[in-house]
Length: 256
Image (cartoon, rainbow, N blue to C red; front, side, top):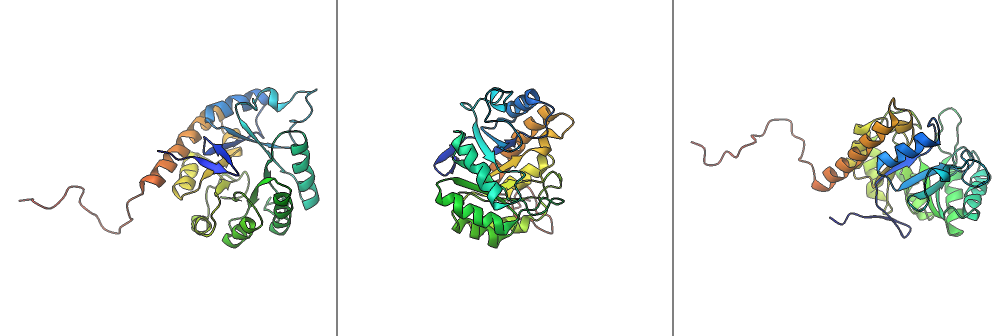
């Protein structure tokens, strides 16, 4: 089946995207990324060295010719900071793709959607392919699309919580309301969470803590790979309707 994911003119092979924070070292990061089967690796520009080639660099372990490097503005609490790091990544030749984060609260790490909307509009006008991390609000998702977002990335649950998709009904509404791809970002804790997100019809899942924080990150990366594939296949296959009462598995016609 031809089931390509295309965002901003870029074709992605994998629907599992992987973050690079919280691993023990760059070598463990490399092994987990490889086990995941992903072709998209997201990197926090202000936290991980991908620019200074004179010191130890993540790109010494993650081959940018093999993986699409997706810079993100994690840790940015103002529009100005988010714009600065997005532009820095592009000036360094990393990518025009940017996973945009404008955080509104230090404790919950929920997005500042007002600032996010402003930054999305500015960066889209500057030619960035903007993928904003947002809450699970369908109205805001549509406004981000109108502002020029190439995809929207609603949280499944708070960052690092591992709670899974807490509000699948809002995610379903977002999928109905926007035409751009929808990528679940944050909250996935285990393989079944990733499968649920994909069965809802999401176009991809971005996972960091759910892999890096596992007892065996390499094994969990492989589990997430299979979970995303299974969820996507199940979504495309179409599940049976839910019923209150039983229905015989074998046809009743012709029985004596």
